[in-house]
Length: 323
View 1 (spheres, helix red, strand yellow):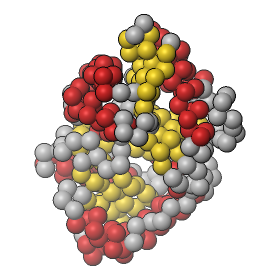
View 2 (cartoon, rainbow, N blue to C red; view 1 turned 135 degrees about the vertical axis):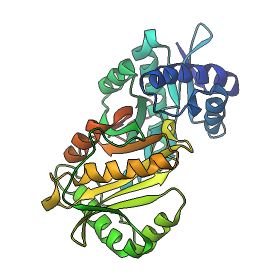
View 3 (cartoon, rainbow, N blue to C red; view 1 turned 180 degrees about the vertical axis):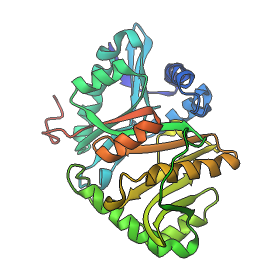
View 4 (tube, one colour; view 1 turned 30 degrees about the horizontal axis):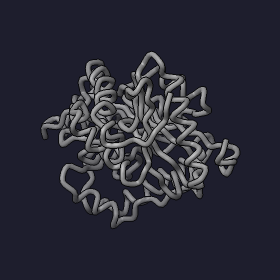
């Protein structure tokens, strides 16, 4: 097997490899948008890696057996580590030789990442790529984030709660900011233990609410807000396969601890889905950390996974580049 620079002549075959797997996933998950079934679109996305030399191709007998491209990001996931991230569309291999091809590509890529000072290795996989997931587990990666989707239809049966549910307005921005601060503080505590992040300010909440297609829904005990569910049109920061004009993404969800178990989040979701259905949206997406137990239990009840994102923190991130 030969590992070479990903170049323009490889892109049509590379795009075809990815799109074939994605078409299979869409057949099992009809809510997914079809934009990334388009090989020309995926090929143009892969061109992003060529000028910076951040793509590799695996060749067997002169034919493409797989490819891998990546982005570099400082302060990966709000940490001090520089990260290398491989999106779900930025890699694919021939199925019969999954482990060998991915292994060769990762060896070559990680050698470069050492030179770049990368301290976090991350990759997103389509949920139907079981062989790929097993291969990356054996290369030291663990599950980090799950992207999931559902159709934009109210829950069946409809959710019921004694708490009040209403759509937030611009005047609610200070309340939303306070809830978002609690939301992010929750992520820093065991067992989630994420790096601290800045919550949205009242101004940021107002700006988010003012954008077309966006909304926030509140759960209330009387007049007191005790939880929220935030939506952004188009897909938010989720994986690329969910992005479409007909997608709405959940980008924040939180219920105060004393009010959990009362059906608040299900009622928020149910009400919001009904509203987005009337607006013509077809796909609702969410991404969540797999190590957040409350979130994982809730979202997996109502959504179907479409991407798994894996992470490895090398013990010797500054290891010898020649290895």
